[in-house]
Image (cartoon, rainbow, N blue to C red; front, side):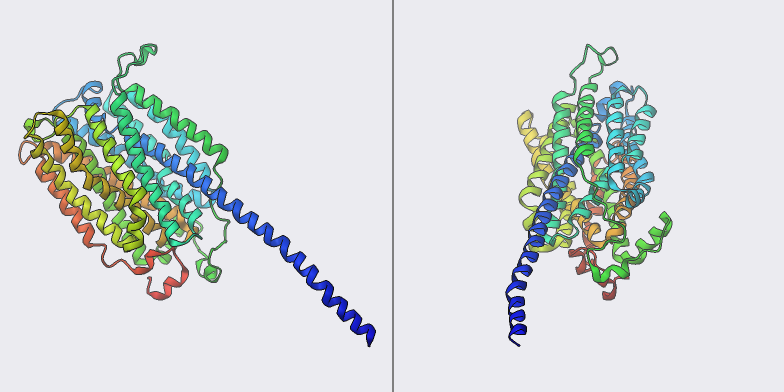
Length: 488
């Protein structure tokens, strides 16, 4: 008996020591692993935001110079200018609409990083070649190829969704706010850069000696090249392992049956339900309106005073867009988070579309106000003040809608969801500039710009009304148990 008691006593003394030793090591390893994963995630977020900045810059740089480029380089005039600007603006989005869903589906199987690198290579080459176009169809073809092979807008959304899937709601929403701020910075960077560098000649390059549009495009291409190298070296693959689920209890319900792209689209409809379909439709219409109003805004800024516009040069247009981007970026940095925390992302999106409608009418009101003064600084101040509602609406609209889409999608289909959104959205983003740019140009002889911008205002207000029956669960990332709450 004493021996047995002694054995028990030894066991009691030794086992806690061994147990403590065994527990301490895994705890330290887990802490180190969590810290390392968090650091890696934020490095990836920073790289993705850089990709977003320079990818959107490639998209935006041709826009401020488009009217002058069409007239001076492509030798078009009159109403053909508006049609040509619409075609050039639309071509990128046409290519994007054809390929984005396919690229998103490929990224769900083979990873995000290869698709991102392909897009960066394409953007670099196409933006360098764009100012060398001598015909309308060369310019349109360049933008089409760029859009077709680059799905980085959808890929950055998918990667951020992958990285933030297990984060709390506030941090997740803030990441998409940072994406919106990156877009604002891209608009600021590209527009300011074009405004200050358009007209700089490169006499040491024979093919560019008399081309004032080469320098901003070449410089942008170099920055995209640096971003591509950074992404190739430091961007981790964010695609979760196949079959992994952040919600263990939901894992059996998120086993998707589709092996082809069409099959996965059926799964997307099955697990996303009416809410996801509605968000995809809203995203599609929103993209079309945004593409149309940006094109018409550029045309309105370049339109002469006598015809009801602002009568600005390409440099002045670049300065206006730079201010536009700064306002949007500052809003995202300082107001986006508190707004989403206070009202939620559904009401924040409703506010964004409402401001876009109000901003459309403010742009028209500005044309009347600038006619009262001949002082350039006062005229510029009036124009900039009139862009503020639009700038805030842009940053509080589409970025918030993207966050809603991310919350509505199962993580295993995130690439397909964002690719489908980008594909359908790009199709309407293509139609927007083409339809509204053409309508704007041909309506000048009648109602002037008032009819076009009134249509924008009415459409954005309809978008505001359509947000009021979005379900409450969209405030948080997708979980399988939403199906039980009448998701379908």
